[in-house]
Every structure is written in C-alpha cells, then in structure tokens.
Amino acid sequence: MDKASLIGSIFGVVVCGATVMLVVSHGGNLMMFWSLKGVIMVFGGTISVLFMAMPMDKLKQVPGYIKAFFREPSQSVGETVSIMSTLSDKARRDGILALESEVENIKDPFLAQALKMAVDGTDEHVIESTLRLEVMSMQERHKAGKKFFDLIKLYGPGYGLAATLIGQIGMFGALGGSIEELGGMLAVAVTATMYGTVLANAIAGPIGDKLSLRSGEEILSKEMVLQGIMSIQAGDNPRTTTEKMLAFVPFAGRGKLKLAA
Figure 1 (cartoon, rainbow, N blue to C red):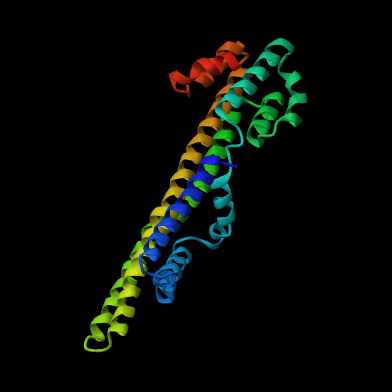
Figure 2 (cartoon, rainbow, N blue to C red):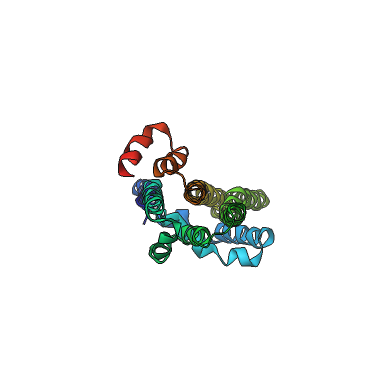
C-alpha cells in the first residue's frame, strides 16, 4: 500500500473532523453540517455528469482507479535497472536463448512479454512497435482514471453552486416568513457549497493528481524496459544497457542505481 496516499487520506479526514468539532464545541451541533437537499444536488448531480461524460465500461473500472491510488508501484526504477542489468549480463555471458528460463520468474507482464519476444528472435522493429502499442494502450486506460476524478473536481463545485442558488431563491421567496424557514434555506445554500468544495479539493483533485503521477512513473518504467530489451537483443555490453536505462533517471539518483546494478 502507498503510505503517502494512506497518510494523506487519514490526515485530511482528521483535519476536517477536528474543524467540525471545534465549531460544534462553540455552541453548534453536528446537524448544522447536514443537508439532505445539498447531498442530493451535489452528489446526485455529480454522478449524473459522470454517466453523461463517460462510457459505462470506464465507470465499471472505478474500483480499479481507487485501488491504483492506494497501491505502490509494482516495480521501482531501481528494481527495473537491477533486473535488466542482470538479464543483460546473463545474455552477454550465455547467449540470449539462456534468458528463456527467466521468463517464468518475471512478475511484470510487460517485461515478460518483451523478453519472450526477444528470446524468440522477433525482429527488433516488431518488438519496439508492439511494446509501444502496449504503452499507448496503458496510457489511454490511465487517462480514463484521471478523467473520472477530473470530472468530479470540475462539476462537483458547479452543482454546489447550483444548490446554493436554489437555496437563495427559496430564501428570497420566504422573506417575510419565519426566521427558522429563512435559516433552513440559507443552510442549504451554504452546506451545498461546502460539499462541492470538499468533494473537489479534498478528494477528487488529490486522487486525480496522484493517478497522473503514477501513470508517468509507469510509462517511464516501461520505456526503460523497452530500451533495455532492445539493447540486450542488439548484444550490447551490460554496462551500455545500464547506461541507456539510467538516461531516464535524474543525475542525482544515478550513483546509487549504478552501485545496485
């Protein structure tokens, strides 16, 4: 599990909860923050937008988007460099056919597919085009996850504003009536804005940004694997293979990775 995502989520809940309790401790009550009308407008309206904007097959993948937010990357940059360096060294020493026994031990499906194609003697241009299609397909899947939370971030506050306007219309229509009725209408307006703001800035926005970063990391890892496999198939020196992959890593982090490789 990604510790940063877990800590951030818990800390966000604690901060919001503590703020609510501080308000309650100064003469308020928890029901001040509840508005069924606001919930229906903001959450119901946002859900309607998601159904309008995204196809059903993408919406069925929402649990996977949440899982990706809390999941650690399957393979770090250091692990990728280490594995590819080991494979390159073995291929240089025993020949590329010796890597066939390694395919079953590799957990990363992308690397396993690439290695199998190289061992089978597939043309380098075919390997590169096939793997880039895999990366492109993965990138499109990741865009769908980011889009899901971007829609919530964009339209959640919008529906909060719509609910606020509805509450204000009701409040103006009730002028001259009881103060309780006016207060109820004002509460709908304010709480709906709060729901939309929290939904966008405390939930959807951070999750979408984390998924975007995760996507970038995974694409980088796949590109490193691609360059490593192409180098191995070309019969490059293991040191050359490692250097090609380290080209994707900032200079500050290359020293430790070289030692690990």
